[in-house]
Image (cartoon, rainbow, N blue to C red):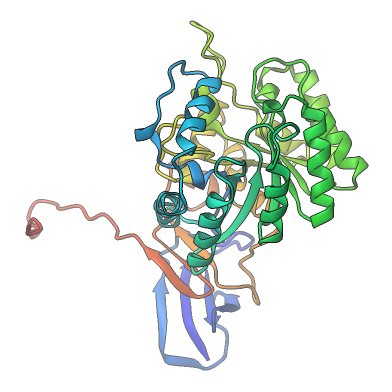
Amino acid sequence: MVDLVVRNVLVEGYRTAVDIAVEEGRIVGISQVVPSRETDPDAEIIDGKGALLTPGFVESHIHLDKACILDRCRNETGMLEGAIASVVVAKKNFDRDDVYARGRKFIEKAIVEGTNAMRTHVEINPVIGLKGFEAVKQLKADYTWALDLQICVFPRDELTNLPGTRELLEQALDAGADLLGGCPYTDTDPAAQIRILFEMACRHDVDLDFHLDFDLDPTGGDLREVARQTVAFGWQGRVTIGHVTKLSAMPRAQLMDMAEVMKQAGVALTVLPATDLFLMGRDHDHLVPCGVSPAHVLHRHGVCCTVATNNVLNLFTPYGDCSLPRIANLYANVQQLSTQEELGACFAMVTSEPDRLIRRNARIEPGAPATFIELPAASGGQAVAEIARPLWGMKSGRMTFVRPEAELRFPGNPIARAPQA
């Protein structure tokens, strides 16, 4: 028995609007006419009104454990180093309940903005121990009804010379962390950290996601070493690098050389435009460099590229509303992209590309879970251009949020009463 029909929606791969039939949380048919099977007279009917249906946004790089701490930190220098130093102090007061409460606030906002899958980085060190991980693990369990949450544990600070950190990472992986991250530029021996993390990832059979090359010097860096070890360990297609603002400072020939290195090694790129814009180029008083790496160029070259939020309401990014269309629009503005093809690529970098990165592979097709959101747009490119806010979303056939449509009050319409206190 078909128990839900979503009528008149636009879906990628179909030339005209279609109807989608859902049975027990899964798509059982897509056609211009509901499939010829018995429909329960009590089946729910949703009129899509010709809007776009998409599997949903995927947040490929966020720090839930550091979200919403702007009121307890202050960056005296404005530079990356100042933000790191201040947050190190703030982390001493983090506890499980605190991390859970702030992470919950972000997740609930993200759900309403159409995000239904997420990869969060969680810091592991002897100061905070596993408190942050335990809180986020609980969030993963509590919000599985609305989104799929992947937990990446990583040493934000020293690894090679900080006793206890390796053991804590091992404990987190044994306790259910999904993958392992790293931050080589904060280590006294970056190459050694990279090697240690690859060895650990191989032992636990998990993917890797590095914070990498967060500067504007086109020379040096750790990207080639990560690519080399990716091939050496046979981890192609299982490694992501984030920020990599160094790429934004490279001449085109050098950039394309690095793109080929990444493509051959199967290393993916995640760009964090809000954070990178805010922190990079602060030593310039004119012609300030944006520091946002051109992911679209690497995307065209065959590298898996995503655009993500990184932080909200903290010293690394002191603003944000958890909207990935807004982040994609910001990226398009910075990179001066405007054609439908270019904007469509930006949309892909917050939907299908990060979906591939986290290996969810969500699709709107018969047999797949009825997990999708509806956007007031005719295409992904339009959704990016207009920063479209989703109207509703569901996971496995269950509605997870609904956003009431705005209503204009033209002259002569009944005047809505103000809400009573």
